[in-house]
Length: 342
Image (cartoon, rainbow, N blue to C red; front, side, top):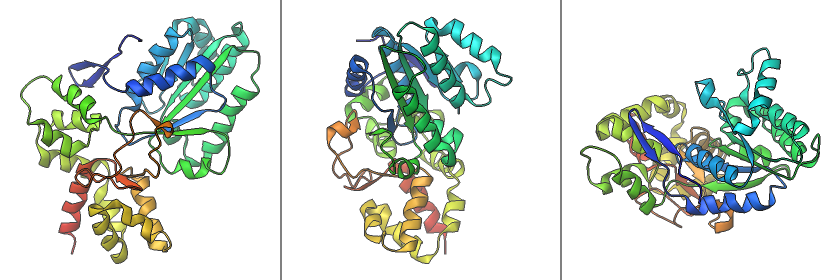
């Protein structure tokens, strides 16, 4: 087992990576054979994809891989591009040759991978890309993924094995990539109850009962961090979510039919499926996915999921058979806004 990465959970709180053992087994299997297609992992915002990729980096290095991790949405350059020590000279050369190397980390990472294959002797190379779809925009997604596939199928030189994993919370990109056979798609959900309880137990200081945190976040570690930072004040947390996700704007865009459907979806998200034949039903579904409030969870077969899939249905957490609210507190925030709307 790879050593556990230590991550900043909240300002001044550093915690060791926990949970996701099945997901790490998945990475180990990829390491043994490499990937024939880029793996695209979708999951709710804040479900732990970034922590998972950083832990995967350590695991892949233990399997002899040189790893490039790129996260274009990170503010600091040192966090946006992380790499194995074996690639240090190559990274320096590539960045030196570019006028503004950190202006497009997604493209730089691809260039580094290509250069590493040419420079190293039959390397084992891993490319881990975190939320690149949000950084490059929907219009570029197909071309970018095709470039990743070309790197695997038509490399500039021979390699031993290559692993390419892309993690994204951008659910709309799935529709574009579904047109092609360029990727292998997997889903990741929030933490399991047991794993989340272990993480919760490691937080310092006084805290409310575990059930309150579980019912609010549904196992989402980023929301747990926010809850912790606002002093476990549910009202403040809801206010922050409304502001950050621009939910007032979202509700203001909805017509009467959409508001009525939204009310029903707050009770059972599967009602969205029943209204996809209607233009306004499709519009509401698309908006809820675009705002990263709802996710499609059509299938529960374990081989389609990184780590454990969500339960078949959980009314308390807002999980249906076909759709699920990414976190229960999103429903609470929308209920507050809809209640204010006349």
